[in-house]
Structure formats: C-alpha cells, structure tokens
Amino acid sequence: MNCQQFSELCPLYIYGELEEKLRRSLDTHAASCPACRAAQASAAAAVAFLRRNQPRFSPEEVSALRVRVLAETARAEPAPRPYLARGFFVSLFASPILRFASVAAAVALAVWLVLPRAPEEAPEAAVASVLAMADDIEQESEEVAEVCREIDDLASGIGANRDDSGASLSRSGATA
Image: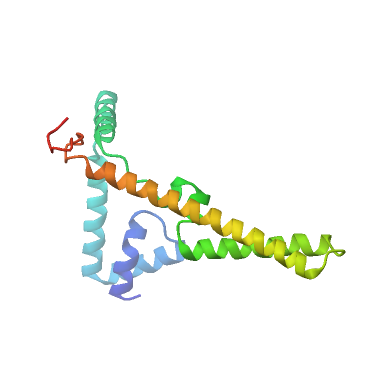
C-alpha cells in the first residue's frame, strides 16, 4: 500500500467501513509511515470531536423552525404549472406537428375500422367516407388549436395586467 491509497481509504477506516484485510493493510502502512499515521490520528480526532459536539435541538426549537419554514413556503409564489398541466388533449393539438400526427393517426384508425367491416361497399365510397372523417377531425383540431391560442392570449393578458406586487392594474395604469 502506498500513501495515496492510504489517504483514499483512511476515511473508510475511521468510520469502520473497511474489510478486515484492508484494515490490516492500512494498519501495516500506518505503522511504517509517520506522515500517514499522523494524518490518520488527526482525522480520527476530528471525527471524534464532531461526534461529541454535534448540535442538539430541543423540541421547541424544532417546532419553531417548522413554523418558520411553513410560513416562508406559504408566502412563496407557486411554481409555474408545466405546459402539459392544462390537459393532455389540449397540449396534443397545440403543436402543428402533433396536430398533423394526431389527424394522421385518426385517419389510419378510421381506415382500419371502415374497410374491414364494409366489404360490400365500393372502395371509392369507403375512401370518401374516411376522407370526410379526416376533414372533420382536421377542422376540430384547428378549432381546439384556436381555443388554445385564445387561452394563452388570455393568460398572458392577465399576467400583463398585474404589477410587481400582484395588484391588478386598470386601463389607466392606476392600482385597483
């Protein structure tokens, strides 16, 4: 064992977390190396001091700290809600890429549902009904996207009508 290995393993030795074989190896090295023996003694003394002098808190101090922490957290502003907190389906249609993917998935599902169950219909009629459903779905997704934009506009308008203290501002700029 060398001094570098000793210094890496010394904390584990002091806390009694080494296997017996490694403990004996550290003991052997410390017996032959005065610098490592002094470092081990110093670290052991520091740990013993900290164990003897660790702070002790009374139940009243713990209770007072708990009250202070709760008061501080009550005054803190709530964390902003993540985008998905508005609802999965609303956020699904907010992005044009996701809107397209959802329309494509709906069309694929409609094709799968309609074609196997209506073999007596001509394929052209089945395709026309699927395309009509796809148009309906796309129109509805655009309507949902418009509602999402309106909600975002309203939310940003509410935030813009507040001053730093959280009070609402009237149109003239005076605090209400």
